[in-house]
Every structure is written in structure tokens, then in C-alpha cells.
Picture 1 (cartoon, rainbow, N blue to C red):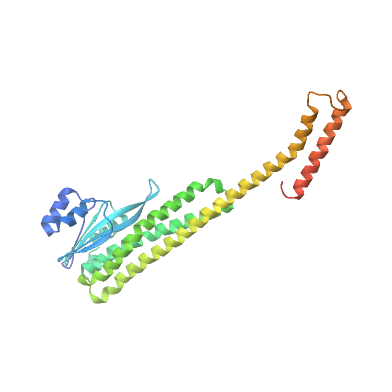
Picture 2: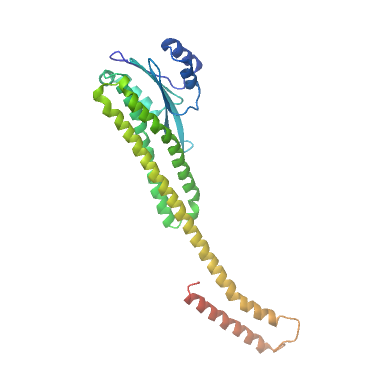
Length: 298
């Protein structure tokens, strides 16, 4: 706390924490119920004495190497701000610790009111998305290189995972954009007029994230199409070679079948006739080989 403003950060609030919040601050039971529920959509509810905000942020799980959704519930009043993440958000936790340890920094931020503190928290959460976007962009660049370096068959799974990451990220950001626009319109309750531009910056950052994701979506779809085209081209090459080989062996098989019949044939029992037939088959094979090479089938 500083300058009459208090920030409470409760990771994974338990039942006792929720009961204490309801008794201490008089929060509406429906808002407390929303805190208990972990499947809330991003939203902003304006009560007479405070705002209740639900935000979703993307976090990268290094263990599972997957993009996860983290919910952050926020109560904002004239002299208090309470953050309730359902799991520790590294960016928010780091900001909280920085304010807790630096009295001068805490005083400079808290003295501007809870609206400005809310801006710092939301801005920190939104900005944490950009390193993940850069990592996704680098992954897409690597996938593009792998496709044209001849590793198309090996990266089908990687392309699918990248596509799923982008879909998950878009699912997180899409409803957030509407909430941030609502927050921009509601900010006047706890923010000085000269600080309006700060929330405009958050909205712009969210739109930039969405634009990047839209671009990544188009890129990964193009990479998927390119990879499928490369695989199809290689399959066509294999089929073309196999077809050419089959056509080359077909007349040889016909000749061998004719002279292998259980009936009398010209040259039967003649050792020289055997070599003559073999010579004809060799000449025919060489002729077909030259023909297919010139036509580009082999």
C-alpha cells in the first residue's frame, strides 16, 4: 500500500479467501461466485462502488510446451485493487514483487490512483504476449526453412502444433479485445483525465497482437498448403518412376511369357535361340530406358 491505495494479490484464492473478501469489501455474491468459477469469459461488470473485471492471458508451459489460458479476476475500487489469478502469472507476480520491494516506485505509481495501477497491471499482462508471439514467428520461419530443405515429411506434426497454438492464442485474444474496449470507456471512474491515453495504448497493443495472429494464421495455412504440395509432388515423382519401370518391364514380361508357354515355340531346344531372345529383351529394355529418360519420366 502507498498513498492511500492498497493492492492485494491472492494466487489461487481458496474458499476462506473468498469469504474474507465478501465480508471485508462487501463484494456482490455473484462476483464472488465468478471468482470461484474457473471457466468465466472475459468481461467487465460495473457495480456502484467498484469494478469487477475478468481477463484471460496466454502463458507458455515449458513442461508441456503448450500455450495455456490463465484467468485473472480483478476488483477495482477508489482506494483498493485486488488481483486473483487462478495460477501465478509470472509477469503480474514480478510486478507485484517489484512494487513491494521498491518504496519509491510504489509511491510514484500508487499516488496516481487505482486506475493507473490497473493500467500498469493490464499493460504488463498484455505485453507478456509479445515474447510468445516472437517465439511463434521464429518457429514459423524455421518450418518454412525445413519445408524447402527437404524435411517436409518430418514436420507435418510441427505444422499441426503451430497451427493449434495460433488457434488457442486467437481464442484467448478475441474476447479480450471487447473487454479492453469496455475498460477504455469505463476508465474515467478511477483515472485522471490526463491519463486517458494510457488505456488507449493497451487497446492498441491488443489490436497489434490480433493483427500478428491474423498474419500468423495466414502464414501457417500457407505453409501447410506448401508442405502438402511438396509431399504430393514427391509422391507424383515416385509414382512416375514406378509407372515408367512397370511399362519398361511389361514387354519383357510378355516376351518371357510367350517363350515360357508349354507349347512348341520357334527355337525351342536351341541354346543360341535363348541368347537371341535375351539380346532382343536387352535391346528393347535399353530403347525404352533411353525413351523415358528423354521424355523426363526417369
